[in-house]
Structures are given as structure tokens and as C-alpha cells.
Image (cartoon, rainbow, N blue to C red):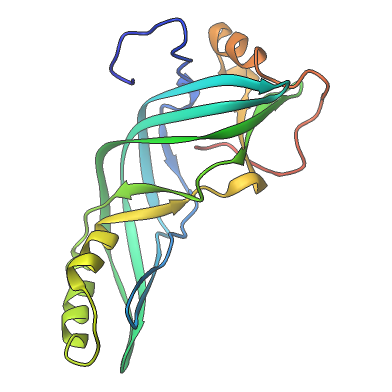
Length: 211
């Protein structure tokens, strides 16, 4: 959809989101393979969003089915806390996310106040897959192969799980904040079609300025 011709129901691109973001949520979903546990985190990162598309369909006032798609790339630091068998260690290396697109579907509640629109998922996947590249993946797989002599582990499956990590979406406790002054007339008009009209304040959940 990002590269297609726009139609009447193709939603809207939020230009405010197309920028480089830092200080994003650093915790990734842990990976378990047999007795080997890998806890992943990225304490430093830069993610550049190149394009995005938000498509909404009303379910009830203020609540809509949503499809959010973004094309992005990034880089940063990856830390893996590893436990399994006779050892426990921590590995650190650089990580990159090659240019890719991710699409998330769910249900959102949109509210607005004088300063911003707030988009909160009320029903969505717990995480989204992101492809990464790092020498750390090979190092962890090497440890897995060492452990293979002591326990039943699938190191190829572990490599796949570490090459496409699951990034938590945060669920209903977080809201995407879109400042009104950063939105164009077309973007505001689109969001107004779906925003709850009986609320004048943002939801009590934690609002974040990034995707």
C-alpha cells in the first residue's frame, strides 16, 4: 500500500512521523530455545521512518479498526543477557535494522484535545516483527552449539528468532500523541472523522510522541 496509488479508502500519511526517532522503547521480547534463554534490549537506537500510512474504519464513535504501516530503517546497540546450562553471560554489539516495512492491524480509540490527537490501541498484537542484523546473533548461536552437547536445542531456529525480533507494542497503556500544530489540514480532517467527539481531554494512559 505504501507504494500504490491512493484511492478513496487508502487512509492518510502522517508526515509528522516521517523523521528520525531516538530514545525509543528498548526492551525486546525474550527468546527461549530449550534451556537457553536470551533477554534482548537496545538501550540506544536511531530509527528513521521514511513513509507511513494510517487506514481507519469506524466501529463505533471514537473507536475504529486500524491498519498502520511504516517503512523504516535503523541502527543502535544490542545487548543480550544469556542464561543456559552451565553458563550465564552478557554480549553487546552494534545492530542495524535494514530498510523494511511493518504492518500492524488492530482496533484503536482516538481522542483529541486542544493540543493533540491521541491514538491508543485497545486491541492489537502484543508485538511486531522487525528484521535485524548483528554479529551478536552469530555469537549467541555459537553458544547454542556449545550447549548442544548437553541439551536438546535447535540452533537454526534460535538464529531465525534472533534475526527477526519481536518488538512489544505496549498495548492499551500507551497512546501515540500527534500534536495538532504538526499536522496538515488533510491529516486533521481525516483524524476528525474518527475521533471521539464527547471528550475534550487526552486519555489517562501514557502518551508517547513516537510510533
